[in-house]
Length: 129
Image (cartoon, rainbow, N blue to C red; front, top):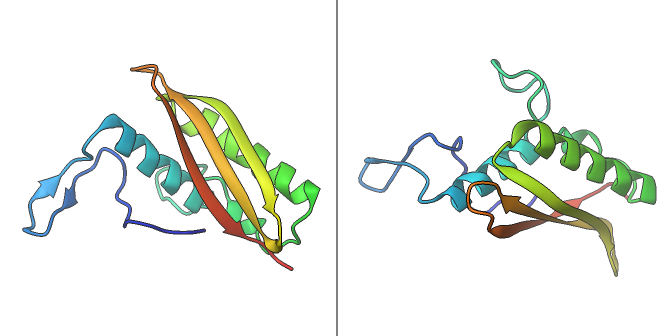
């Protein structure tokens, strides 16, 4: 999975450069961080939430097939439905990247329940050969 900024558990403070604790700047940021954590964690990894996580890493050693992409889609959709109550998932697209047979692109489109705003998150996953 591609990683950008370091993750903190959503809604928990993260120290800034001066050591002061900072909460996520906005609902959008908090939700995106939580989605990224959810997709990075495998079930059983968190002590008090043993079922939390999509478990995508279990799948990514497999070859990039239609079946794999369907399973990635289903795990993401189910995990978001179960563990992120602040959103309504509009769409999850999982597709092979043309010319890169070991990579798949994921685009998650969702609506924030509190504000009704549309948002999306994209990532690239590396699969087996």
